[in-house]
Image (tube, rainbow, N blue to C red; front, side, top):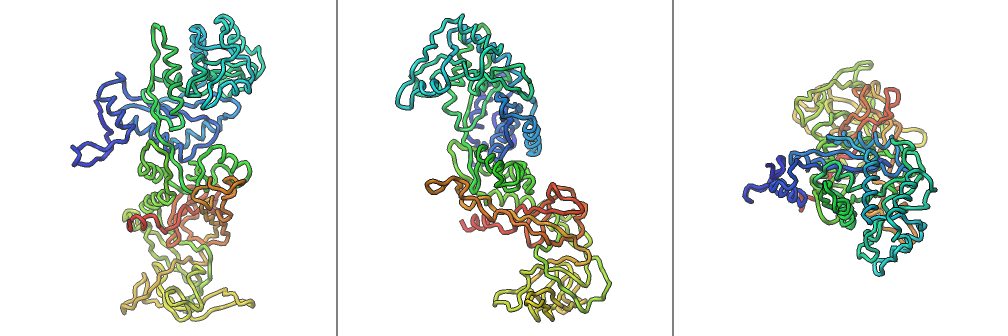
Length: 576
């Protein structure tokens, strides 16, 4: 019997046992005792009403990983009980995101597949006198629930005869009543200290077309009623939920226990376990607020690279390996915490440093003419594709008389500690030669338009035979061969680490960063990426990690900056 994850590592000093989080500890104990008499089963139950974000990735990562580590399986189940907000578009997007993150589900399930079974279970509760049809308005039901300090009041319809409730529920099912006119409620305790237990609604009338079942149903189950039953039908052993469902667990258990009361063949009763959701600095995780950002035009859709959605992160160039590394470092906790976005960026850099090919590109080009280089001549220089991966080899990079360098790599009157190009100063061009600036050309307004330099042909490859040293190495692109590109520079979407922290009378939108996107149109990139597919990752030397945007094509190359090269997080950790 498996008793611990097979891919965890622990401290040998602790009896050679791996260190387990609290969820894995429970599962390990259950496996040891053979509590369930079956392999472990978990599930990820998203509602198909939007796109997944990194918070969801943490949740389904736990679901899939725990099942995998303990020799079980995880189901992907769409909780499609609200036809007004759910669409097939979101079903496909969720499946794509989970697959992109590297997880595989065993069974693809839908709550709508169980509507008939849930209806029959509801009939059983009515027959047992544990559910009733309530004719009160939604407002009257809300007022009747009471408060945290005051008990609720019984509905005037609470003691309807079983036969009447059965008849009304059947007629609800047949579509005889308008929306909102009646609901089915569980009969529990209107004075219960947990408000969720005060006769919760199980079904509401909703004449709406469902994305899968069409118009077959006009009553739809509430989540609290459906949740445990779906888990039961699928023989889920451990129903892993985020912490907001902790107060719903008594209801989860009550519904299944109520069905099993006096039942000859009890239904399966899973165990619900809650873990803390996590927050990320400079980010909001509320689906409602993310939808607001999209619908009000603060971002360019759900896959905007500034969004915490998985499709947005994918478009920005984040890799699933980096996201999983980050989530593993965050770990599983019982209490809500906030994770540092800098740690996520550190994980992205760490992975891309290993796998991303290097290329050269100039974001703010300044033309350089090498006056003593033969006109019309071009040579191919060998450039290393990835110094972290010798097997990646080299590529040819064209070099010619006219080049582009970064504007920031030249100063006409440099300060003491500026070591890059300046009048009379010699620097190294990456993979190429030493050059010396001999002349600065300006337009009528005094703007620098061109540098004229000489090169030393003896320094090919970047080293001088006489051993002289230079203090700076610059990246460059051959002007004759450069590709024009648009480069999108992304920064935090919010200026405040906690976007929810606002002054009175304001909301999270007041913290939107007006400089979260900078579009640079006149960038020059080496020609090796001419046919690169969207999503391809690169490190632009000295500038950062970038990827080819989804809308890029050979006629209009678009690069998104994934993350810069500066890793303040790693430096902070070193100091600590």
